[in-house]
Image 1 (tube, rainbow, N blue to C red):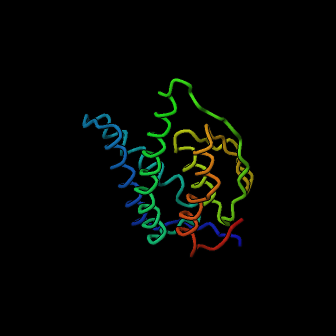
Image 2: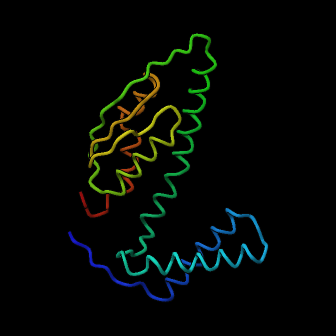
Image 3: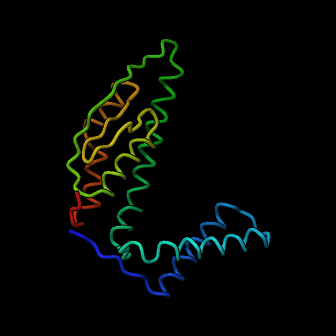
Length: 168
């Protein structure tokens, strides 16, 4: 389905710039006038720059599902970090690197991007290539490759995008 580009309202533009500005302040942690001024200018420039180029309509239900996904992903990252630390500290260094081809059933571009990024954020695995619904993933050992092959991350992401219209 082709989407039409339409400009966003000035109210939403202001809200978007405000969110970007707060994000700027959190990242810079600087309250000097020059930093605040630059942040304000760049926030409005970015918000205005992408205002009419995409048919972005805020999807609060989708974003709330994604925000609820992050704590689960953080748990997986910590769990994988502990496993990877155990591998690294083991005297024999028992790694078994492998490339895995993963066929995804996700039918939304953003879902596939979220899957690839989630895999890459998990220590010991990295998404090496994405071609539509096919991902090539590098895993350091069999435990990490099983985590990819059991498609637990994909099923969580599938739940997030269940109500979205397919775009692949």
